[in-house]
Image (tube, helix red, strand yellow):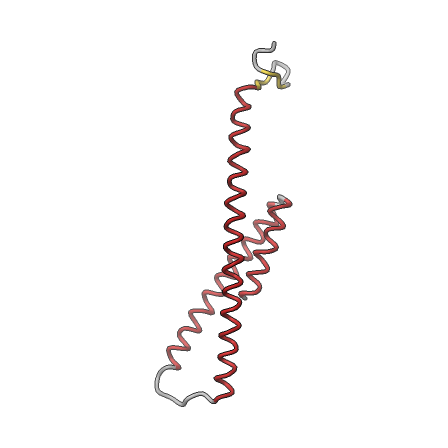
Length: 127
């Protein structure tokens, strides 16, 4: 699930570049679903680990090795996802700055250009 979330973050960047809002919202929805599933799996795993710490038989060396490998892979996936998340957040900040820039530009131009009688725009004061 962590790898799937990482892929969604990478693919979402392409939608931002293409300004495909429908695809962006679909990706964001998929990311939210994956986050919910990860939280659910995490809480389930935490309760299983808590139950396993109680009295009972110890796990064999093969199971312990598999568990260590799985945990190492999960840590790698978490690190990769954290890096992608930082990149995605920086990208969103830059997009926000671009939107603010264009918003300010259009706001300043609205004072310069006024709609004419026939609906066409002309420089204010030139008629």
